[in-house]
Image (cartoon, rainbow, N blue to C red):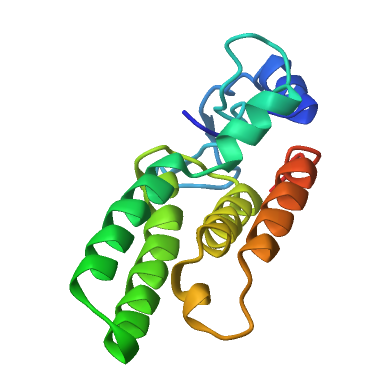
Length: 165
């Protein structure tokens, strides 16, 4: 799994689960119905090492490499087969697809449950598209150095975040 593991996750995983109670008859029940008190189970995370993720591990889990690789392939195809307004439209389409794919892929395939991590990874994808140029390069205000600056700042800041939800 690719979920970022925090110190809080380790504490929750180490806590003993609340044992299930035996079945009790509801007071006054004459129909034989029974109640079952709720039980708590510890969360499932990447807690094999019993340690929170390091700076580098968090950074690697935040960067959606699969989405960026797919985007690069699609970007190359669009650039070689289109020009002008048609190129801009297709670059918008593949960037939007990539952002949606990032969220869905991480949630369904990589089993990431933390919404904050999903949002950060999706934003990371958009930052990568900006750094590569993508649709942003079709606008007159875009300069390649801007992508490099934003990507560097985001990379430095991302791994300082420990997603809790």
